[in-house]
Image (cartoon, rainbow, N blue to C red; front, side):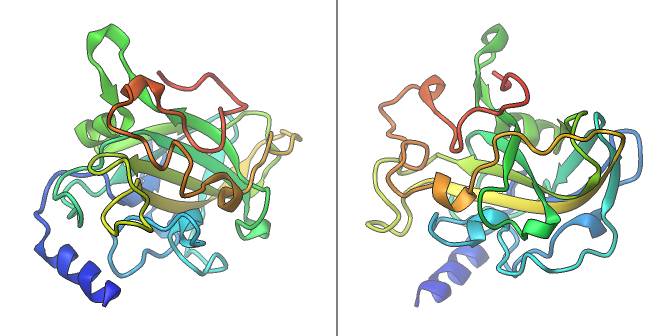
Length: 243
């Protein structure tokens, strides 16, 4: 019944400019590489709403799925993620409304345990008086550039992107109301990071232990100011978060 409802909502949703899923990944000055992305589920725009599900890690139960061609990028360089601008949003019929974050983990870990290091986040910006969330920037440009830490050791890593939709009913748990709670639009790709760095990832955490149904980042009451939002997993150990 629950899956049938999801399918029905997905079919009825309007086609809008959105930031629900990443369609390709590449370098800012080079060709994109969609083959570096982990396989999407059947409903590409469907967010994860159950934060106790392993789908929250990469929105796929199979972390061992081989990608056709990892994206090669030098440590200290940038990666560009491009979202599908015409995707359907199955809940609101509009683009996600909220912050974003980006993480790395060694591929050998399969994403399990304390292996994920947050390399960047962008919550709510009031810079220059033009207040907006990260999702607003993604929708406006359809892409987002992420810096890869210069000091990390070469190897294959998962890059996890997450856009959190906090719009709608923010005050109830998903377990009390199927349509309530934050919605997590998660995608992962495989990077082949090159360079001469030797450092392991800083301050790795477990995704499954850092997101709980009752956390304020999952239940963000509409009475709160947007600038009070705190991202799951703590601050990035690499750089000051975008504000």
